[in-house]
Amino acid sequence: MQNKTPISKIRDSRLFWAIISLGVALFIWLYYTSNYAVAKTKTFYGVEVAFVGQDAMRDTLNMVVSDQDASVVNVTLRGTRRDIDAISSGDLRAVVNLSNVTKAGYRAMSYTITYPSTVNQSNIQEASRSPSTIGLQISKLSTKSLPVTGVFEGTTAEGYMIDASEMTFDPANVTFTGPEEELEQISAVQVVVGRDEVNASFSSEANFVLLDAEENVLEFEDVQADTETVTVTVPVSTIKEVALAVNLVEGGGATSANVITDIEPKTITIAGDAATLDGLNSIAVADIRLADTLSFSPTEYNIVLPNGVECVSGDLTAKVSMEFIGLKYDTFIVNNLSTTEPPAGFACKIVEPLKVVTVRSPEAVFDQIKANNIRIVADLTDVTPAAGRYRVPTTVYIDGVDSAGVVGSYPIYIQLTEEEQQ
Image (cartoon, rainbow, N blue to C red):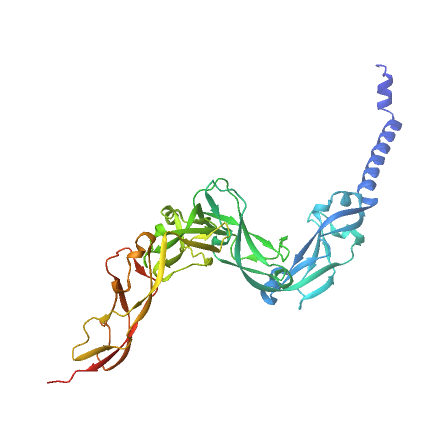
């Protein structure tokens, strides 16, 4: 018979197996009690708040949650170690039921903690929660339409400019839907355009921002717009410096060579379409008939610009001063008055026997002018063929001195009478 080794004797020993069985039982007991029997308490932070019935409240009552006191809550749970350790804050939800809401206003709402489907909820108890309720602002939905405005924050090439007030937008207005108290804060819809070295008009699609009355940017999650972008067209104008001028209509013995004109300012800076400004080198501020002007006091005129052109230098008026040089004038009594052919069947009589006229000419020839060189001819072309007294225009002739002329106009009175028929 073979002798057993000490190890074999231990393996065959009942005491050995009894000890082994006891150890296994102890391990199983410890595992069970640590995972199933031993209770554990744990606080879960940042549990997200969610809503049910929000769409129905919006569709049937035209109301939304416009604000809430908390978007997350903290909840303390008690349960078996196995169940508690199987949960994270992201698995939980604090659900607020909105189905019982019937009117707008502020209200404190209770919430229910929901668990993932993998957890046996009957093994878990809620020990505490913070906050205990969620404060909600329930608001009526409203609409508001505002025009789109623009701001240019880029740069233009030399000789070009952009006037933000001339920007156009498609659509020109944006309509918003959202809580009344949020829509009331919106004062403007603004598009910011930024490009560098711009030298031609352009269009682009752009996002817009909402501004309050102090031009602070607003952001609302519950406000919806009928469009997310607008197409902005930015007109680019050419900038040009042009001279101011006066149109002198020669006459009355004076030509432009006899006039020294001064305009202040002498030039202005204008902006407009390139095609419009290309052939525009000066702008006349006044038309002055020299035949009507014996002397001239400094006079201020409005600067009238072509359509589509603006003055970027800010000048609205110009002051014109004018001085006559190299001329001489005097008054003459003229009794050489006549008329053109009167209307058929009528006789004409000049009521005035003489006129006093002012004659002007270059100094060198003025002494050649005599009263008997001057004659006045009345024009009866437009006289009504009827008996009566009429005031008719005249032309003054200064025979022998072509460079002389009269200053002013000299209409005369005539009398028409019907001729006796033979």
